[in-house]
Length: 146
Image 1 (cartoon, one colour):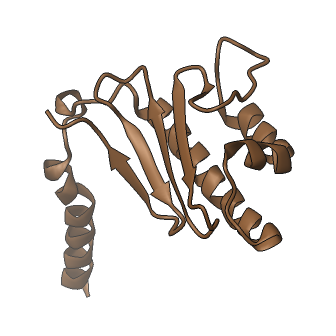
Image 2 (tube, rainbow, N blue to C red):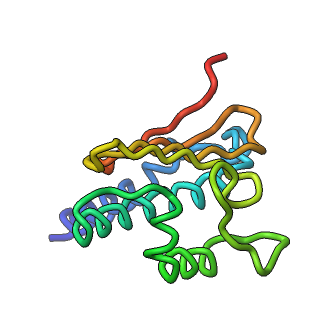
């Protein structure tokens, strides 16, 4: 009984302390200074994808940016208030290309309305960072080739 208690205690101690030797040193990990902004852009791409699904369900086809904005102004404004931080407290969506300061959107809808391709780029990121998606809902990362 006594040996079993020592064995269990040692085992638990090893489990608790064992992973410490494999922990990464936070100072050696390169941090992405644009990670937060890239996450916000990703959120807008997800929002557009979701609204496009609503659009095709309600109207039978995907829609270009001006129509999306007209049909779902409340959804887009809600996203803007929750997630977009800017020096402009009264920021509003603009026309394509620059829908928000420093954010370029290309949203191409097929002529039959059965598909779309979108690219949301951060013009302030010198790596050419952009998110790309289409009617499949899959979101891809894009950067310049160096």
